[in-house]
Length: 221
Image 1 (cartoon, one colour):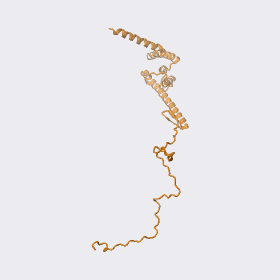
Image 2 (cartoon, one colour):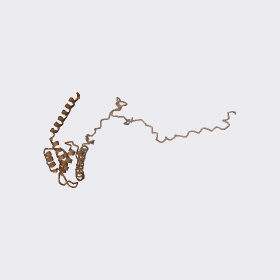
Image 3 (cartoon, one colour):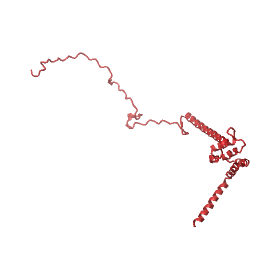
Image 4 (cartoon, rainbow, N blue to C red):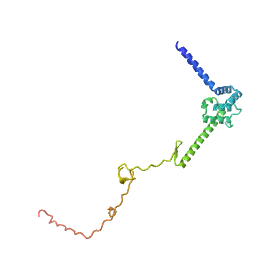
């Protein structure tokens, strides 16, 4: 019994906030009235209401879609400026609405014409994005850098070589880095042996030692 006053107060506040939200956006309310008129078959009243909504500066793509549906001839082969404008507003996203939900009851040639305009707008937006990325890439290439994920990365500067970690205080290791080879200076007057040099000629002949006879090798004699 004690919870009823609180529940009643909560209901009143919720209804007040809902009415306040509707009062803050009269264009949405007028758009809703136009949609009801359209599905009742009163396209003339629906178009008049939508004209007021659009003339008031509405960025709702649904208003343009339904005003295009109010035209006498709607087909996939018929160019409809309202459909094209609505598709562009949907891509721009200045007013985020569920276009697919609003068009659920629209089928046949009219729906095909709408989807054709939406696909055309998406392709144009994609081409524009690719052109922007290509321009950024070319600018980065001229600057010596590159692009990664749409972000221009400046050219990388090579850092000066660090001294060797094996002997950082060695005065003879100046300018050397790990893994680099450095030729040793040649001292005048020194002879470096070459293992691949030809053998030196032999001067004179060494005497051949005599071969002992079997009797001389007999230990029992």
